[in-house]
Image (tube, rainbow, N blue to C red; front, side, top):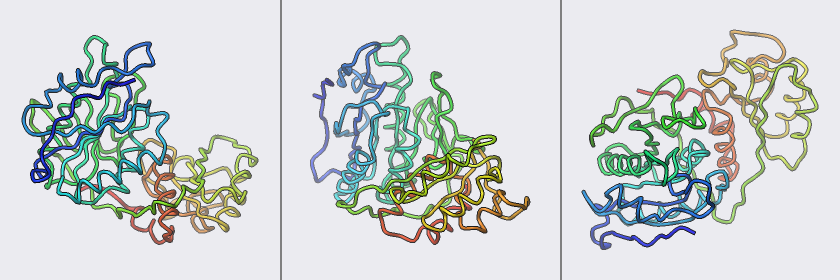
Length: 340
């Protein structure tokens, strides 16, 4: 069990100068070959969190990120919202890397628009030679303080780079520089304690209100493969599924044998269309025509989700359903998102 004993911070009167650090667990607080977590005080001390400004440490849980649930991030978002209402502007979240591309995006959909939130973690355990956790945590704290009030939103700080939550993906299962933003690259960097921003995403729709008493609807994710069997589509026609995301081939195409079953499902529930490619967009303008192409699918009820990947589109659809919003209307603001 983690030893969460170091808790530094400021009085309520000084919260505007405080950085809130949330600990969720993961490799950054793990020991190789052991189920017990590392002493969090050692990580924080190595990151020098008592230097350069007040930090309030809030341990929410200690789990591997593969076990994080939607409700865990809802809890985190609710706490950030409460602290933000008190005047806090800078937040750091330390967690495992396996689902960070998803948790960061979900948090960006739910957290206050004016909050600066930096997510971080590590690929090496706390007791590994050359463990990079303290350095990543220190970078995240520097970025949160520097960007607070100037660059709101959720960023991932890993290996000296800053990635936007909308674009970031875990690209490697083992290397320290495991994260990237295919097609875009990092939006900034932290080098020798200095933060440099290269670009800023266009403002995204949201944040969204997910009522406390509203459970998550079931949203499926179907990745289409060559010669996929139509039977793989049919389970999502069941009323138990409230929505579906289809990761199609290339710029949004599926085998012709899947076209009609998907259109039938889209007539009963929202079905988002994305590409399974690491980067790029769907062909909503109809460069390619014919049954099963992106243009045909969109014309027959599927909803264009633009450049979002399937995992993030699934989270977005889940939130839109929970918020009781019209999915098709909301997605018009997402299909063409980019950077400036």
